[in-house]
Length: 208
Image (cartoon, rainbow, N blue to C red; front, side, top):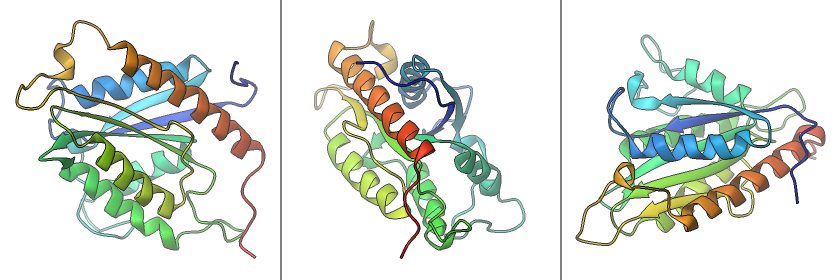
């Protein structure tokens, strides 16, 4: 089965690493792998490492002077597919990822000219890396939040890598991407593209 390539799509990867650029980041590596997989279906992609920008705490679209979230929000609004990438720290998503979700919470009160929430019609997928268990919970919690905000979650929409407990190893240090991770990422990509193109051509109905 091949994905339809007749509708142009754009993907944005928000990398929620705690490491500022140019420090190597496993989360960014996995996010780029997801973008590469999406690119096989002619999806344009770009990556933003959120920690490089001054995203103020809050739950409004603009938190005032110095807040760089409005610039990032514009990129989210322009994208058809959001790749939400986070490391696992103390069993949870990073504080940067949590802040992104908090800022996206403002979209619950933002609508288009037909009354649809601003994120309707957009696809969200997850990429999680870490050294111990926690990926399933992070994906579950993040998907619930993103779905509440209005994003659509495709089948097999999360890809992740966790190493064995009590034996730290970084995803960046692997000699090759594990077959299971690569296969999961490919499923994520084709399903995300399929759902995005369907919604691009036939948006959700406005609320009754």
